[in-house]
Picture 1: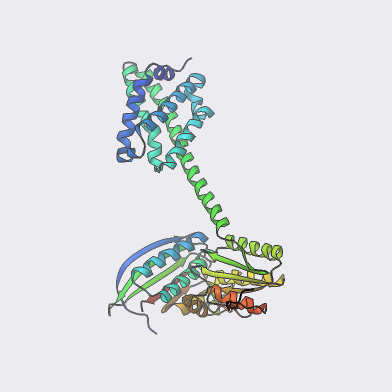
Picture 2: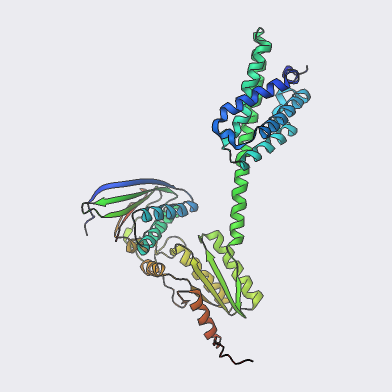
Length: 284
Length: 142
């Protein structure tokens, strides 16, 4: 049996579209400004078309699982995330179609109570499923963005630089939770091997809080480097951090520490029996 | 030293402690409150570090819990931060021993509790086996 819903949409597609757009704008209120009329119309038109084709092909029972329809819903949800719509504002897009279809069904089947209630039930179930799917997709896009940013942050914040032949610098920035510390340690040890370094400066100017866990991670990194024959200097210890470390009772014995990166670099050069001298003006 | 008499709680904020990422949230929340009352940088860093230790204890040893962050005022109109961390974990049988530097039941340095006490103006711990643990610290401005 051909879907009554499908033929209803086919016969009144343009009126339905206009009514649906009205409902959407009313439901969104001021949030509707984030999207142009043209964009809203194009997205709505695509979904309505996809819905009609799905209903014609599969009927209302299986429609909510049709990949072609879900693809359109995916595209719309991603678009709305990018435009800064909230999850409920995104779901409104689908749910407002329910109102438009309901009005249409009443005009068409108002006199036939049995047909009206059956079609209404089909519409409600189908659109509820579509709405929930939109919601899930929205959530997924958000999660993807967060995961990507976390990943980018991991890569961004742990460079190892060569300051001089055999002298490495590792500027640490941000929170040193255990996940990142492992990457920091790995990067440093890899660079020690690659550059054949005998000195590494770990600069913690950009680490806002040094608690016992951060201190422990730092000490472990220093110990691991030392096992590979590389001495470490910890620099960037600001006055407030120094006082906090003392109160915590953390022992940094055996680790050379400096207040600034330049101090650490000067120490490193001295260690290598090198010094920087001012050019006296004699051409060489 | 008897605990200070607090005459007023100016602001009160509750934070859930469930995962390691909540420790970061606590640090940021405490920093915002410390800046709000105009605490100096050294005291800010001390109270943030103490909060970091206690919040992590609640997450790791207590299996999660709740933190309450307050701006308080005493009769002399002095402002301070009072932070309490409460978990529903196994509790501590021997508090004396748990406060000893270097003692740990986990894999840390065993300096968190003692360190938090030294970083705060006032420190209070309440715990018993199977009763969870509640630690309250206070730091006055200036």
